[in-house]
Length: 456
Image (tube, rainbow, N blue to C red):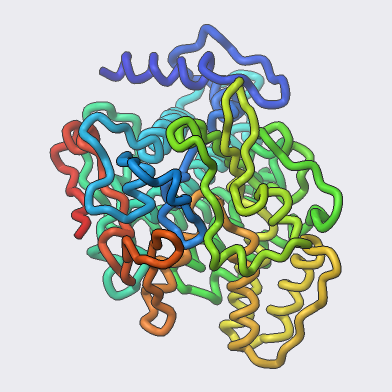
């Protein structure tokens, strides 16, 4: 089984995708053991390509037109309508399988790095950086998985709320049970702290695929924000921004990225993550739209409106000959700025929070009028509106925000889907079990210790 596992891994890592920035891959290695081979694995652009669009469809930022939704019964439409059943028996959950495929790659590196043979590449600097980058990548995927399949972090229940299996070694025969939300977050934070504590790890990686300290600090800030540990989130946001704080000006002229390589020179990218979604369009023949709630926040002069949308429809491109919904959900400077701003507002620093909102918004919107307030409550409203403008269709970030807002009774919201913009056809109340994506039949069949997310 392990030989089969490593052979499939070799296909994915060494021959199944091109290498980033023209680094030539090895086509012979099927059982990586050296630092050089681990570096090749980390250089694979497969680590930057994933797809969490179902979580975006579950958020309140998306609207599927009635004409597109009519007659549709598939995991896209059922996710959008928060149905009790999402998957048909033969469906594959690419969020789950692709995330664990990447985790497997990192686990192979992490389990073998200490026994890598001594050679000219196996220096303490190279070894330390391979270790840190592997930990950061794995932490990213576990933070995603915990928020896709687990409840929002609630300190009162996190020790019993189930998330996903915490697989930390490349053992094909293991059938791990689901870890708790607290266990996953604890591991993510422990690993990220170890990664950024590496004195050889640079502020930024050699390219947007390789994470540096700024990306590690950004993920720590994200994790602590989701935990409502605002003091820690604020400190790690500071650490990230001290290393990387440059912004693009998209308020006027800006070339819309349509593939991963378009992001190479983007100073905002701390760790690239993108999706090429083609199946949705091939089924619906339409791109989804943004919801009225989101569109009301996006003015015509907002570059995010013009670069991501075509009218109210999410912009499409052509990739490998097919109509594609390309989304960039990279770990980025703007997200870190908004994390810091939210922490400041929650701590009562209205002017500090609004200053960060203004610094970001002026790079996004033509004719921008700076905001001003002395009220921390108003500042928080401004921050969260700007966060929604900036982070829509970003691999589930809006859905994850809704989950954490729902933990607090004062910020709970009920979501609805409407037909003809009038008749309510689906409702998602706060803390509903339908916020949690269920596991496919294949996942459950392959692991008898898995407990299903029951949606009701």
